[in-house]
Image (cartoon, rainbow over all chains, first blue to last red; front, top):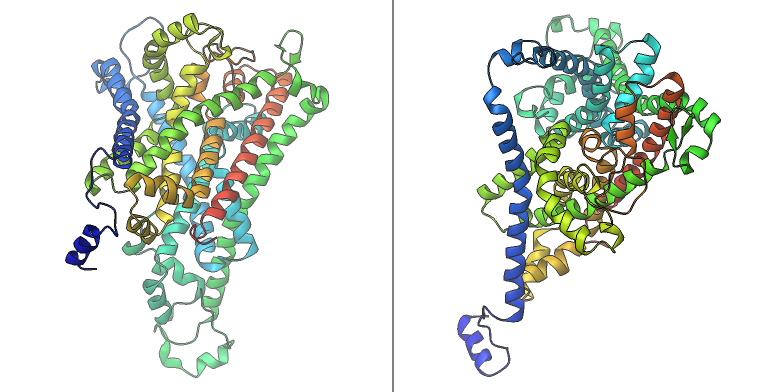
Length: 213
Length: 333
């Protein structure tokens, strides 16, 4: 419909007024709701700012290199740091990664390439999604039952196992997603170059274009 | 799909082409077959590990909880006393506290999460600014639980104290405001939990809203709707399954949140409707009691862990099913 035609029809009363009035009920409702959405988004951003502000104000003055290398102070003493906690974090994350990443990537290759629609893959995908929602405390309880109660002591491997339980589902699902994304041409080309079966997913999908996990 | 050579190639077949040693072309050698099989086997093993991990977790926690279940039976689920001296272990208040605090958190966090998802997907912002807000929401998910706990103690509790005092002073006859806020309690816990749920709800709802084809919105605009009429009457109903799934998954996340709640909820063994009184959750109970639990108490704690596991599994499976329904084209009914 051309513009002149619209004007003619509006003038002859076929159409209601097409002019937008800012104080029309519907327009006003839309503006108010938009303002509400802006307000909600800004309110949602406040906690992040507040958390960072709190950490900097309360902890910033103590920020010093010794913090990362020294041991915590004995009671009622000043100084010291949390070097042991940082080393502990690194060790635990290392163990967790060593346990979870190989298993997770292999499982993802199977889920994305080798048998995406097999019943095993569907069950495993379901298990991984369910594990994503596993509360961290239950991963801890599991490691407690499986390692601490058996060996009799708390240990870094126990913590690492708990972390691995939490990491596996994320590794599997993210890696599967990444592998699926490079499904088309790079993979076909590689098959065309006579890469055989399962091994091609190992070679064609590791080069840079598909490194998304 | 992986393609495998369909015709078996014998060693003899290979010998007919001696020139191909070292070449990439030609039929697969026995080693190739072996490597292919081995890789398949190992990959399949990885899948089994993932699958069996879930079973193993259930079996391990269930097995350790079994003596406790046999001894206390359903009594622990309905009793409200927790007394280590009398060997009475009831965790009904914790179950109630878990569900109640998660529900409150979902009311607040769900609302803000869905509004945030609308805000980020419905062309309110230029792409760059939208990216800023998206990053902010993602960063909210990256803050460790303990930091949220500290923030709740140092910032949220003092901030809401005047409001809480006024409400309990003037509206004390409403059960929700019947007690005064003495420090840690349900209200600060639920507020912090709401912030922790928000990123989950916002992310999954955004996906749900993006699944609605753009032409649907264009059609709504073409019919002369305002922006919000299009959002409320067309986009939200079309994405409703996915958004509902987002809320269920957010609820599941709230149920298992541990450290922040252990620091904020007050760890008091009582069932209450009041927002300002202390309470307790299953996860907090586990976190605080495990380190010094005797063998008998460990059994009961395992029992409590099993209950928490059952609740979260059910909620997450329901959420997963809803999300599976929602991932189909939402405009096709």
